[in-house]
Image (cartoon, rainbow, N blue to C red; front, top):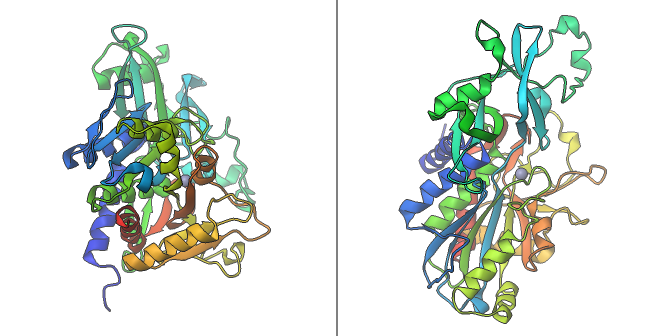
Amino acid sequence: MKNYINVTERNFAQALLDFIEESPSAFHAVERIKQFLVPQGFRELSMNEKWSLTSGGKFFVTRNNSALIAFIVGQGEPEQHGFRLLAAHTDSPSFRVKTLPEISVEGHYLKLNVETYGGPILNTWLDRPLSLAGRIILRGESPFSPQIKLFHSDRPLLVIPNLAIHMNRKVNEGLELNKQKDMLPLLAQITEGLEKGGVLINLLAETLNCLPEDILDFDLFLCESEKGCFVGLQQEFISSSRLDDLAMIHAGMYAITQAKPSLATQVLVCFDHEECGSTSRQGAASPLLYHVLERIMLAQKKDRENYFQALEHSFLISADMAHALHPNSSEKHDPTNRPILNGGPVIKLSANQNYTTDAESSAIVTALCQLANVPVQTFVNRSDERGGSTIGPISSTHLDIRSVDIGNPILGMHSLRELGGVKDHLAMANLISAFFETD
Ligand SMILES: [Zn+2]
């Protein structure tokens, strides 16, 4: 049997699994992207200082430690060549630990009060070893400048136990889970000394080597504690958490560092808060991108008129995962547009503009795929299914530029373990490289 997956595809998919393992939260993802960009010559710009940019310069900015915009200043005049933008998101559905999280159960168990973030498939979080990841806010020199530290427990810490089938005989006829009652993770057995409370804060303080009273607040999320892996007869599938949308972030960050220089300014946009509607200061509905692009123009001594000209020459790819044909539920798919795992990147279309793709932007992606020698597929919802949306239409209402929605096919979107194709990941990076470098 000839190898279906070649070495380059295998290695690139393995690099994705490593990246996801090191990015258990949006904060960690941004930190990991920074660590990747800096050795490649990218320099961090401060949002509160004046910028001065010259062609070929590589820079990035961050917002809230959870969003990042990286760019390479184009070789041409920006008002004539515009921006090439690849946008994806750093967040995934999960559970956020509430303040005052500790709940004692009859003096025996300690569980954590959590709030659902985005739209996880709840039952996939049951009976799995879980960890905690996010950022901790520590007392700083002044109230307005607290210190921020990342936290990721390096061992499984929590579990959300299922109810035995003997206590819920109808469990297999459809499981209804209450987010406040059924989804609270168990943290500890209450033993001597633990009954006083402050268990979580003490754990954080011990890990960060600080005093418990110096911890002012935290943004902590539950996460998968087992690393992703390959599955299938030829190991042709990727089973991992957070493929949506770290796979697109990972492909984008490789593409921008490896693409040849171009006349256009190449931009990688990593937004946060896609899963809850993008309406935060670091989400796609914020003015963040609009402002950063304008500042890139001003820092090259261009004016607002030039900025609007540049937007007319720009193109945005919104890259977010797509739904692959399901082996057990093929009737849920459109009769003719049926993307499969390992069949290549997917162009997403919606007449009602849940995706920004139109015939022209779709044609551009198809032509780029041909140029990059990458197969391409299309996704349209069944007409009687509502489907999802993504950052593309939200960005479009804030940034007046041509755009398209694409993504790699996966199964089980928003499951704790999503399933993707090994071949698709390298194919997507090659498509994005072609997008960045083709003038
Ligand atoms: Zn997504």
